Image (cartoon, rainbow, N blue to C red):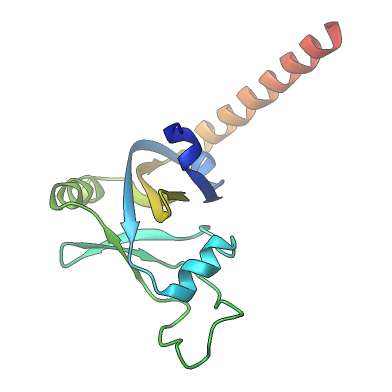
Length: 156
């Protein structure tokens, strides 16, 4: 099997490409409880508004809401739905994230969650915010591409 087929994308943060200009991406693991994993695998997660913060040389995924798994035992649930999730990164990667984050106009945001070899992984990106005129330019480019594709499709 190829590596492309091993990765199953669970969710993608669609607003990232519109709001930010991505500089660099990292892939990492997450520390989760069992019912959180089942809830995520059922695609009951939304990455909008979530971000990565670094405290005590550890990376945490913040402002993410994972709903409780409906079939889980109520006695086993000992965590909050809106807790910070620890991201597993190397020390070098955390230092790199920290230095780039401290620079002006940089943010660390999650771009997608996927399964690789039966393990949940997260892709995070170092990004800088786009200006309003950059966003408008992207919209113009998309519209122009759509018009060209329509004309090409009609000519066939």
